[in-house]
Image (tube, rainbow, N blue to C red; front, top):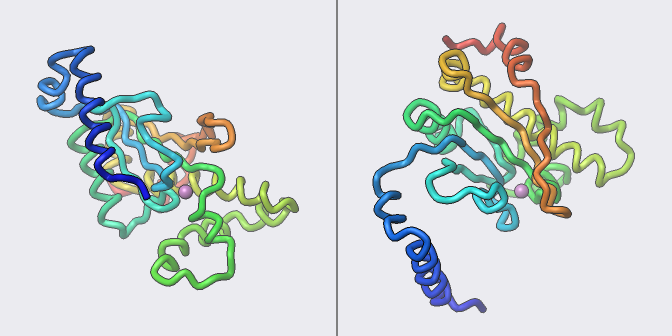
Length: 209
Ligand code: CO
């Protein structure tokens, strides 16, 4: 079992490292945050946020949940989006999924997962939306990887359905990005979702302002 005291030792070391490079490091952090990015990722312990992007404190506003979901009635993610976009005024929102995602895998099984059922249901909805494409993929691993990607894409669409994102796009050109972290190589893959085109396609129904 890990000794929790080590965390505090690590923290002391980290503080000393930061101060040795810049004695005003924490005084400056205390002045406030002005992050450029809002990162929405999976809670998976192997998929860190700042670390894999090479960012430090103050550079990314972060929200993580199981399978990087942007659920319309999840007060938590919706609060993060509203605060990040309207108050912190981030210019980029990233939804980052990852291969080998346990949440996505669970949504591909016929299993009762208890309280996770309603959460994973949204991933099953992604499967249903893209059933034709997914069912054509014979290899199960490849199908699983593709569902990870399509889930990211659909969560980007969910972001675009919010008034905050629609307004910020119009006002200052806020962009939404869909990425996948490839856990086998450590690389970030840009899915290159066509944000302005998706916006145009869904506005007929989802325009809020
Ligand atoms: Co995951």
